[in-house]
Length: 356
Image (cartoon, rainbow, N blue to C red):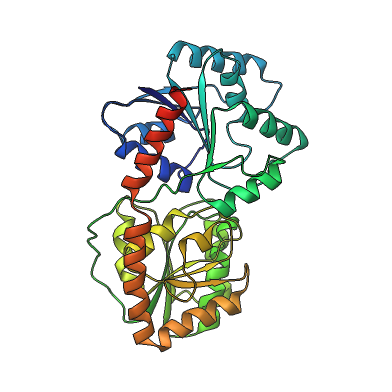
């Protein structure tokens, strides 16, 4: 099978991390080509799977770029892939490239939705409905996320198929812990939707002996650093840059915090649970499909700093509860979010699509 994967993402996020995990897991009889307009990102994705080619494509932002759309169509047709998999980081991602692919007779197309961020215009919404009806498979990462995407996009109820992609099991090698403070952890790009500003306010609300470590990068970093100074929590908040071994830090977290304003099915929650770290998360997207509230963590209202702080303090004040939740989190994480199962489901979907 020749599988082409197209992404128009310019930086790594959950959508790209999930795709990289799938690429690493696919069987050897799947030949892969990565396509997209941002060379650094598609080169990184291609590097996740030995022998993978990549092709830099024109960037297409709107309907006026007829020439770029035609060039994109020509590139797709010349590639002659069995399936083109469009990896959408938001509902409006990849739309013009997807439209170009759908004009190629007999070209099989699969669309994967990673985020319930609504379409950015009325035209974008019409394109979403048009392309969704014509794709050979339209997939998302969680049931609740799928319901939200269907509602925002005006799509038929139940039109999105759900595959929980999971995360790979890893033997983690955490660095030596350098503080006895109760440590709250996050792995997140610096983006307003991720709610890192709320996490900083949570630590300010909790007071001394609580510490926040955020591992990631992004455009919001300067604003977050300013907020840390303004709240006077510079001795208790660390904004560390992203690194490829970031997952090794999970065992050093007492609790994982996901204060997002919007999500689908966060990869980091699955990773934290596998590492045996209870999660406190806002009720966004398919979070309740990952967290068993009161057993592997707590689900709290969006933007509710007091509720986040109260849940974390409860775990801090009850070591036996924390230990029980940690053990349950590890069990659930390993049983429910095994990447091998997700890879097998995706391979089965591809075979189904090819079978017509």
